[in-house]
Image (cartoon, rainbow, N blue to C red; front, side, top):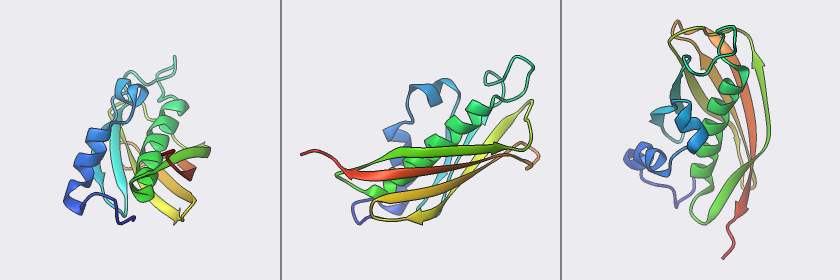
Length: 142
């Protein structure tokens, strides 16, 4: 993590204060944990389904991208911005009720690129989707 990142005890507060954007908010995204080692959030199935009642695959991706991009921005530090340049998801199960939980772990934390894997599980702990996101880190304009 960058020297400019918030203190350990302040990281979850930093993530909550920064926000996740209007889309993730509308979908019911809620932070659970935010540390240098991982980021965790939940999202309800209700309101995020396909017409047949299954969790929409795009909802899994929104959860994953929100987690991975926020974690990449913590790593980037002050004066820098992480922006997503590639994302993919493999859906292996369909949640139909309750909440899904995304657990984001870094695969690579470099100076200019980060790669994160997000495992999304249902209330029974069964994996529903695996999302991988790559973020490019850029200096903010002065």
